[in-house]
Length: 114
Image (cartoon, rainbow, N blue to C red; front, side, top):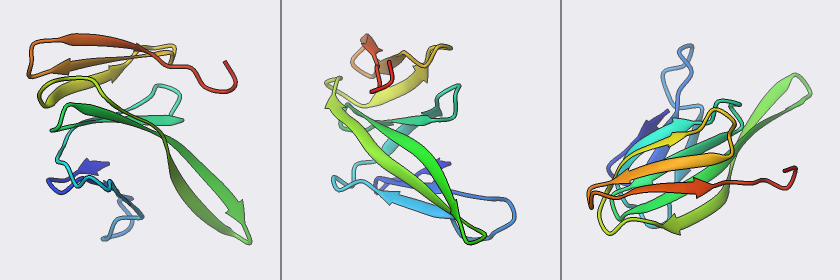
């Protein structure tokens, strides 16, 4: 998974030259950090405007084809400058973000199943 200067997340498969999935953030803000949750179910991305976005990753199988999905779950401003790093805790229930503003923020993250 690659984040771009124009706010896109590109999902690559080594068997294909082009991305298998592209997510374009409407704000077109530079992606500065990305991490997939330990369960592989969620992805968090930090942006240059100080916000975090969380996506739910899923795949459906029908007629011998796989359709990959990446649905927005959360978009929140957390830092007054660019997000430098974001990381999941091992239980998928918290996100830690570090910003260029010198702040560390701990987010509690719960899904419908929690």
